[in-house]
Length: 85
Image 1 (tube, rainbow, N blue to C red):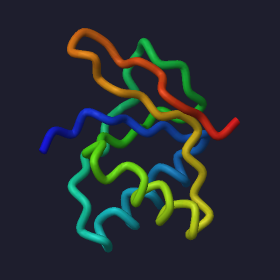
Image 2: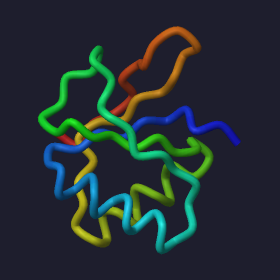
Image 3: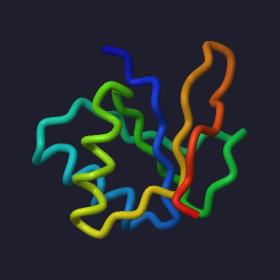
Image 4: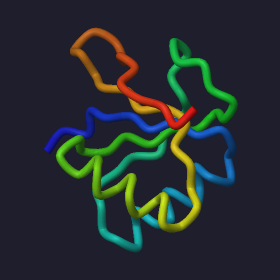
């Protein structure tokens, strides 16, 4: 499983809460600094396996955590896929 989907957040609070939810639900993830090429209000992002992306987003939404952007690794760069805004 590759962690080649990136979730960004508008606040550090949401990023840290998302990490806690992912740990509780035993989803593989990696909390990282938001890559420079991605503009985001928060300096943290979470890498996840895209095959679990829909389930993860649903769990986060159930807990009131908003994902501001979704990005997929193209092999060369992060490409924007979707946002809540």
